[in-house]
Image (tube, rainbow, N blue to C red; front, side, top):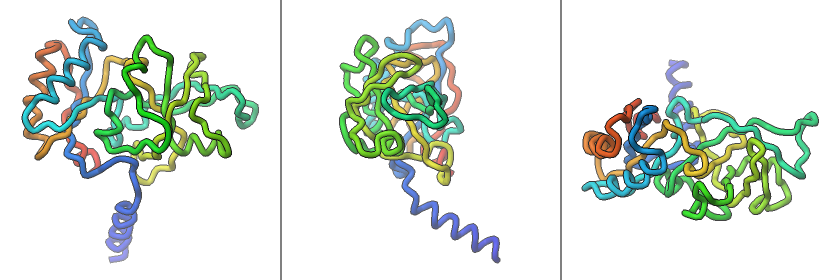
Length: 235
C-alpha cells in the first residue's frame, strides 16, 4: 500500500510539471533516415514532403526535427559553444550544449511557446546568417540581467546570432533537471536522420500508411526507423 501510494503521488506530481510542449496534441512521429544513395538531397526532400503531408485529409499541420522529446534521444547531441563576453566556470573557453535542429513551424506543431524574439523564417536558410533560439534556462544562466536576443555566439567556431527565447522543456524524461538548450534551423544544420511530425484531427495511427506512402514517393530508398505517436512516447 505504501508503494502504491508513492506511485500515485509521483504520477500526480508529474501531471503538474510543464514539459514545455503540448502533450495533448494528436501527433504522429515518423523517424526516417535517407540512405547514402538516396535520390533526393535533404533540401529537396523535406520542403515538398511537407506540402504533400499538409494536403492529406485529416492533417492539420506538419513539420520535422532532428529529434523529438521523450524519443530516447530527445536530449540530442551537443555542440561546442563559446559565449563572448560571458565568464565561464573554471576558465573554460567553451561549453557542450545540447541542441535540436528543427524545420519550419516546429514550435507551433509541438506546442512550445516562444517567450521573446521570433521564430525561424525562410531567411534563416542554408545561405543565410546563422541563427539560434535558446531556452529560458540558458538565457537566465548566462545573461541574468541582459536581454540575450541579438547577442552572438560561436558554435563550433561559426558565428551565430540569438534571435529568440523559448520556454524550458523536458527532453528525456519528465523529472529531469532543465539545462541550457539550443535550437537551430534544420536548413542550416541538416542531417540524414530526422523525425517527421504530423498533427491530425483524430487518431494519428490511422494516417501512418498514407504518410509512409508520401515519403516513399519522394525517396524510395528512405529507411523507416520508428513510427509512433506523441502519446505513446509519453507513456
